[in-house]
Length: 88
Image 1 (spheres, rainbow, N blue to C red):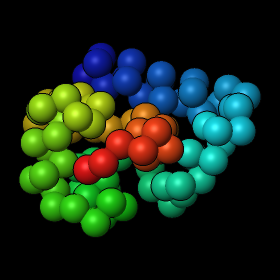
Image 2 (cartoon, rainbow, N blue to C red; image 1 turned 90 degrees about the vertical axis):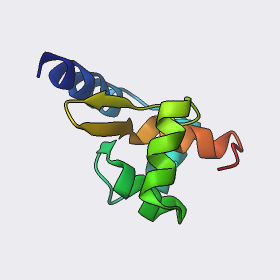
Image 3 (spheres, helix red, strand yellow; image 1 turned 60 degrees about the horizontal axis):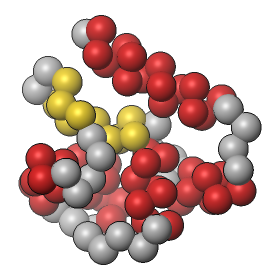
């Protein structure tokens, strides 16, 4: 539970900080999704299967963390990957 709180705190701090234009653009890419996205959220946003996203997290292609039985992906990190042109 402590890991989840720390993970959420970092996401909220990033959200509250003054964002450079590139990051602001990235944040708008996934508007409507939570700051900590589940593999299902990411799959919906990118048009992929949920299991594929879980595999990418385990493989290290998508930044995420398993807390308990669930994976979480920071929305801003995912948006930055898309802006950097990472192919999924």
